[in-house]
Length: 137
Image (cartoon, rainbow, N blue to C red; front, side, top):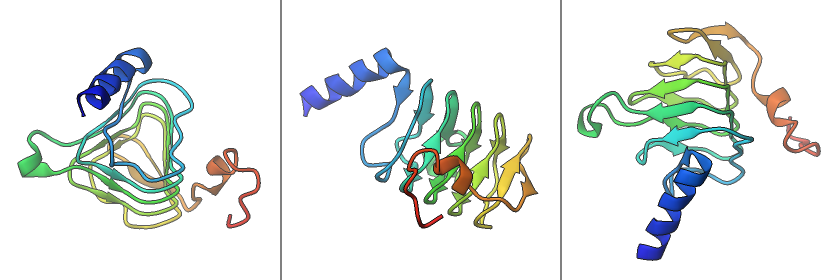
């Protein structure tokens, strides 16, 4: 156990990515940059996160909780997802958006401070870059 903790801390310093075990589903992709994810957050499968993204709570976990993010979500550069919120599947969160409320509508695009719905287009075009054989999109 000690060896894994040491390896996690070392990789966090080297890469600038702070992701705790057991909070992310399969197919997660960070192309480059720094990412910080709360240890209590849950992220679904096949999500893509750009650089300088923060996923965390507002203050203490006992009061606010951590975000629960669905499958196939694309999160743009500099986005902040804060608090005990849920994000539906196939959602795009734009660059520098600050999400503080639930996004329960799947297949939509959100941006701004605070984040608002800006389009009815989902994450398929952004995730298709990862898997060119993605027939489900």
